[in-house]
Length: 394
Image (cartoon, rainbow, N blue to C red; front, top):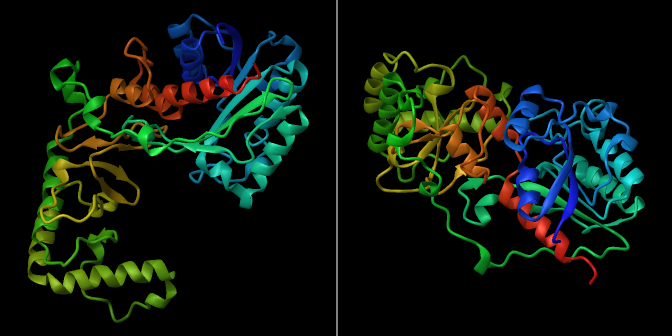
């Protein structure tokens, strides 16, 4: 469309705003319950978002052509408690979208949520959403589209559900198909800043103890004698002989399996592992999750963590191949770029979410990471916005 009016519900820092504005839209209303997000939104777009949507009457929202909403995902996310519509605080926010659609009946609505929404509660949650939107007078695809920025060359694996709705007098949503020719190769270099252009670069570098710790794990991978690199988590506290007084049957099957595999790895490399553990335990960071390693960078004759990207996760140090980053999440701890020996910067995180370089993240670094981790990817929102508009009856 040449020009249109849209509202930005659960706006965060404006992923939908960036996308819709680039397509000719004018934002006439935004809201978000988070104070810091509202400040960032205002700083970038000059619009003061409203607060809690549940306390805003639909009649007080301006008329609009498009409703955008990346409604809160915790109720459906694998990382949350997955209560869905039984969640009395967040699962029901979908129904606030519905009451606004029912009152204003805009031509279009585009919604975004976590991938797990598609399968949550054995598909019942999606069916409730689908049927409710149809009852409100909208056409939509029978299944939500699952899409990730890495499909189009943005180096972040971030599968999200997109729901495109057209008012029934406007048109039918045409099937969304991404063929192999449209898939693009990812390169993490496409979003990285040069180290010399990063103010206070030392804030992002890993510590000397961390560098030493990764070096120890690197040595471990390179010196153990195995036919294949371990695809199971390496637990340093299980690199030992089995305790005859420990009843493994008390553990779930998956844990028994990992314990036995670690034990087998130890037995086949006893002399090296015993000596390695003595040195590793001298590192002050070698405890808890940092004393575990998950190699997920494939099979290679010359494993090298420093050539990959890795994260510090509750389950251990997780190493991934350096083609694209795991999904940004709403925490400060980002991926570590092995070749740079540093964490991602807020600007690099913004690029992973397709925000332009003139976007100003929150000045508080912790908030910037959180907000970017929660954001809707701009380029993905733009793709689905364009597809939705092209489905309009001529």
